[in-house]
Length: 253
Image (cartoon, rainbow, N blue to C red; front, side, top):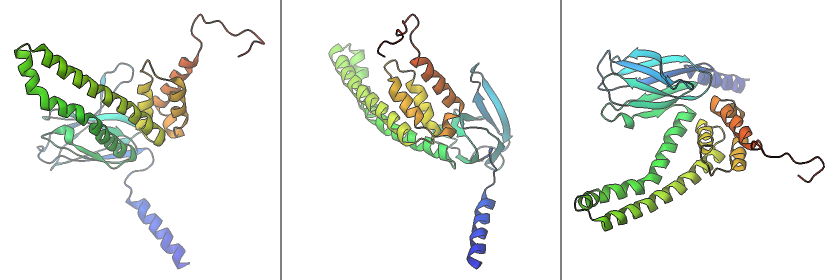
């Protein structure tokens, strides 16, 4: 009996620690160095008109800010800060989202606290590693390229461009494999459905592969707006082309 009471007490303690209920979110922000009274705007993009929509506005007080609300499904949003250049992109979803703002380099701001945001950060870090070789090549050869352009040294220019294109092609191949591998191994990640959606824009994409990845997603992800859009697109891609003749009744399929 004592063990049962202890277990229930632990469960209640864990539940009571959560500040949000189902379908609710809290964005807890730290903005060290940002002046009191500066505005923080929560924004998203209208999926139809592509217009920027302001959803909520709060003020920074003593280096902190907090935004509360309700959300039905994960979706990308941004925080826009008065007097700071750039934005902080993140995934708005149910849960406690922590954002530490780097006012000097806003793209280095830290996002954590919920599954999809943790996955978003980790995925971006892994993709940056794939781009490192190309970035390093550009930095290393920038001065050489500038001098070659000034002296119209086409041989050097063409050689550098050839080497860079090779690196870019390798990076693109690795990125495609990374995208597909992630979507396959992370069925509950919102990032996965966005990857699959982007694959639909590739003219060389294989519909069967895309459909297999989509079918492997968790139902919660399939039911998001991107998930519904992917399902519709797959159905359209599988339809017979306009003007194509239907097989005759009784003929081999």
